[in-house]
Length: 290
Ligand code: G1P
Image (cartoon, protein in one colour):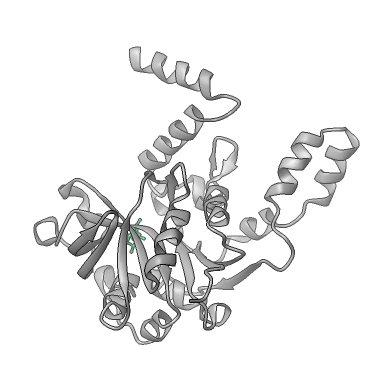
């Protein structure tokens, strides 16, 4: 079994649900306390052993590329002023040269199409997908939990989590068949079903480990829900050809693509922040009592 070392992060979306902030700032760069949302996702992937990141970008997303580059003037100035702690923290987050690739999606045809745009960089390797809209706060990173499962069962593994039935129509939803601990065998999956027709209340959370054959399916995938080329539809086909499991991870996810999800993420990460956590919690309590 090939080691999982590549991840695709689709970052071409407009971020319409958090306009006007996202008119000039990519939604993935919105700060959650003191780090861009995207940095948390990269950290999650690194914890899982990911060594190469493929960003599928679009117009007006240049800030992402710059963010992962070295900032010589800033670094020089921090060093000169003896601010070594801040310098060291920046240095830790900066990726090694050659470990990030950027490809353009060019047209917004859907998540499935975005992933397919990364095919040449992925080649014959298994790869992870992390949707950076979704932050998953967990003791062991969500992708690292999935990798542990993947190392046992191989094939394809996707993260799922139970949501209230009335919310299933916003997600990809799986049809579970049998379960062993947190690993679930499936009989199918469907993108954004009406609540009454959903096969379960287990939603796909935006973390995937897939085999490269998904790219061959995506090449000819027709538009599905919302008129977009859906990754879920291609996975439903791959499921008939290869081992495919869902994994119910341990952790809490936040949808930073929506105003309220983003706000909740800021609260959660502030509450648990090393430097401001205790004070932030007091503040949150004060607000609750007002
Ligand atoms: C995408 C996927 C969906 C998944 C969701 C998780 O939908 O298509 O299957 O459940 O992310 O956030 P989107 O939110 O991009 O519409």
